[in-house]
Image (spheres, helix red, strand yellow):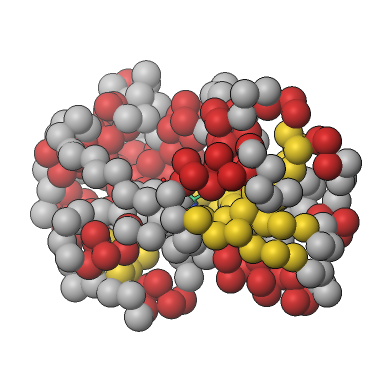
Length: 274
Ligand SMILES: N[C@@H](CCC(=O)N[C@@H](CS)C(=O)NCC(=O)O)C(=O)O
């Protein structure tokens, strides 16, 4: 968004917020963009004063357990104590799933992320439940020996994650939304941070419009015509960003799965820039 808006990907201020604080910070104007692992739900997109700008990661809720618990499936979790964080969608999803599957559990819900992690490590709960990407991150970055923990195979919900802005902030909503779609289109067209300059000579009208060789898309957003060029040049396309931050080349080692391009059997589908 900073590359698109200011032509400089470093021109933003990051404000760390826990799960509970994030929506009030957006509503009050403390932040203009909620860029985090936030699930798009109907309630958040309507009644909370926030509005979703799209989905940049299709996730689902899962379970992390110590191997010493001897559990290999979520169906064996009857009677378990489950750690979750306050203000997440995970609390409700867990309750819904347990009710539907006749599983009894005891929730341990804590506000600060590190305190949930500590409770889990100390054995105050048997299970940590949150988005699968969160579990991968907790296992790798928070557990002293990741091999002593396993993520169970069951995914119990749809957790479409993505950026939010304030309701009424329509011009900015478009910038955020079309930044995502520019990154998706760039990947689909094979345009990367390394080869974007070569594509400036492309004869493909879609490429010319995306990179601002043919003018219009920038003006429509109130941005410089090089908005998408700057994103790809400075940050990369969607796939490059995915691989660098969460993909198989990163510590999290997450497969593209549902987050592959629609042309590869995934759900990522850049809307046309024309
Ligand atoms: N996608 C879910 C869960 C996202 C979430 O907040 N997960 C927690 C547990 S991994 C987290 O990111 N905590 C970090 C923090 O609060 O600093 C949601 O939108 O409610």
